[in-house]
Amino acid sequence: RIAPIFQCYYHAFSDESCSKNSKIINIFKGWDVVGDHFMIWDYQCNFVEYFWYYPTNHYLKENLQTYAEMGVVNIMNQSSYTQDKIWFDQLRSYVSSKLYWNLDWDMEYLINEFIELYYDSAAPAVKEVYRLFDDYYASLRMDGKLTVSILSDTSPFLGGEIHEVNWLNRIISTIDNAMANVKEEALTTGISAEELRERLELIKLTPMRMILRNYTSYYGEETKKSYAIEFFDLCDKYGIVFL
Image (tube, rainbow, N blue to C red; front, side, top):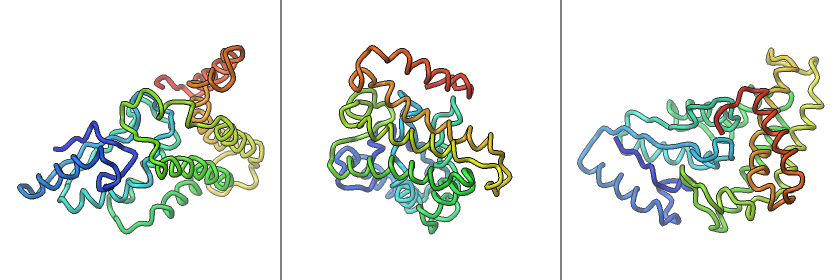
C-alpha cells in the first residue's frame, strides 16, 4: 500500500510541471517494476479547513489512469470523514465512484450530471458556482502561485491575499439568488423546494468560511463578530461540528 501523504494535491502526480510530485511518480514507477498489485491511500481534503474549497477535480481522472497503469486494485480516497454535508465532497464522491468503474467517462459530463440530478432547477446556478471556483483556481495553477497539501495551514492556500473577497461574495450572491428563485412547481426530481434550498444554503458554508478566516484583512475587526455569528448559526442549523 502506498500512501502519498505529503505530496502536492493541486497537480496530478504525473504532472511534470510540479517539482514536488516528481519524487512520488518515480516511487510509483520503481514499485511498478517489482510488483503487480497495489493499494493506494490518497487524500482528497485539507485537514486544516474541511470547508475550504479543495481544487482537485481537474486531475482525478489522470491520477486514476496512473493507478490503473500500475495495476492498483484498491483505492481509498480519504476525505473529511468526520464531517459530511460538504458540497464539493458530495460532487467528487459521485464523480469518483463513476470513474472507478469506467475511466472513459468524461469528467465534465459527470460533474454536470451530478449537479443536474442533485440540484434540480437550481442546477444552472450551481454550475456557475462550480465554474467560479474551478476557473479561479485554474488561473492560480497556471500562474504557478500555489501548491496544496492535505495539511496546508498558512498562506497562500488559506490566505486572503490570493482569494479576492469580491469573488467570494459573488459566489454567495449566486446561491442567495438561486434560493430565492426556487419554485415547487419547477422541480422534477422529487425533491421538495425546502430541501433544495437547504442543499443550496450548505454551499454557502464554503465561501463564508473562506471570508471569515481572512475577515480582518478584507473588512477589519469591527464587523467580524457579527459575520462569525452568522456563519456559526448556519453551522448549527445543519449540524456541522467539524470545520
